Length: 317
Image: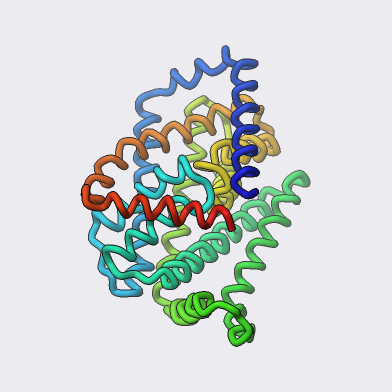
């Protein structure tokens, strides 16, 4: 049922996007008039963001002394990002988990626990930035966003601080779940790693805010850094859960909706959103073949078959 719902949602978004394009296609010529300098700036920012996501993987795997090289910690997230463009939910994560298990002996329970704490910190830090920026903006229309960000921040902080104290361990039916909890108990005490993740995610937020800002500036659309930061925060939050392939349509809807709250017209917000999407897709398509060739030798075909099996099992749950 989940796969069907995801597919129908994706089809609906594609239909809405196609309808909008044909209704406003005369406006889309603006996307071709973006200066080379702007494309260069957006590309540099995008590459630094990709570097930060790779660094995030290096930080969490270093906790387990895996010592991934640059090709692995930077390249693996590029390949998983490409997979997420085509598969929703846990598609890319499954591939990453299987690769680390096969080539580095990284236990699935360790992977789940490390990804869990990474996403919790990402949500906590990003929602905190959103709360601060929305507070400074002080617009009545943004109060809903303030409540959403506040709820996410409170929930993630509470979970990080107190979840380990909930005594459900002995009542769990699965030994596998117990092993994940054991890994969680260990990894959450690595305060040095957590501090590093906080710093990296803060940089990701700042860079994504600049990416959004310059995407609007590319079309001479005046937008404040505060508004760009609010948009960036909620696109990052939405990206934690890959509901549909590549979150196509969801991120664009967030950019359009929040920029609309701040007085920017729908068509202007759409142009900025499309530009950000194009830059991301281009760099993903450019980088993925190289890293996929280096990371997955021909003998690893069974690995990709295992990814598909794992993904189908997860999607049916």
